[in-house]
Amino acid sequence: MSHEDRPARVDDVHELASSMPFVTVEYGSGDNPVYQVGRKSFVFFRNPRPDAFDPDTGERYPDVIVFWVESEADKQALIQDETSPFFTTPHFDGHPSVLLRACRVGELTRAELAEVIQDAWLSRASARRAAAWLNAHGRAGA
Image 1 (spheres, rainbow, N blue to C red):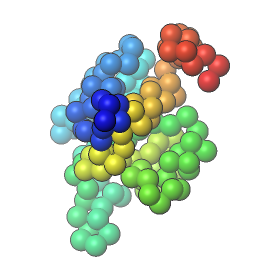
Image 2 (tube, one colour):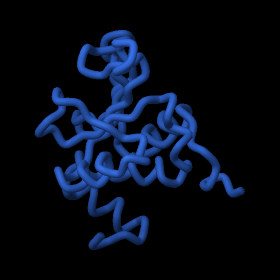
Image 3 (cartoon, rainbow, N blue to C red):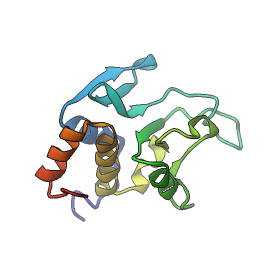
Image 4 (cartoon, rainbow, N blue to C red):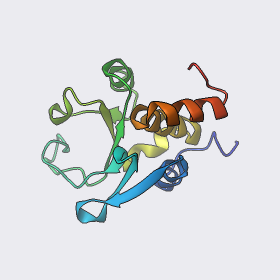
């Protein structure tokens, strides 16, 4: 199994998000990292909130990660597949993002997680930065 085919880990979220260009890290409430490009968040770790909870116990999920997406179509593609670990809540209706519990990160490969994070960054980076990154990674016009 290659490095990219192995199950993703929470540490990969931090490594991949911070490795994108022009990224800064702010710390929200609870000292949760918020990864930003051009002062726009693209990945962040949430505190437990009333909208994301275990339907059986009512316990708030303590490990929700938010990833921006390019469009509602991209969001729906990630959350409509019942085998996908991504989800949303009514709080995020109309918001271009998907949620993922940290305890389910391993359901993705590292390569799949990298793609989600790169796409999150691209959705928030300036057009100039996004075009430069795409060109440098052979994805121009993608």
